[in-house]
Length: 101
View (cartoon, rainbow, N blue to C red):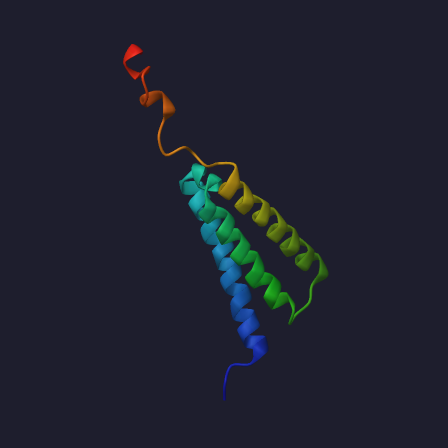
């Protein structure tokens, strides 16, 4: 006898809930974690897992929250990948004016 889809969905939902809790615990330990790509990815995966589980035990309000969380996480991912890039080299440390400082 194998694992049913309902049981697999419930396990995935529990893993998503656990990932939410791990993410929150990391934030309590390291406040700057919210600015990282990992934070957005963890929230995206957690929401996706919980949303998948809701396909087997529907709850409209919870689905709404998960879809909202996914949208916010995608925005955070885009922001991490495009807006928050730091230059590899500080321009003030190179060039002819570096000795004048």
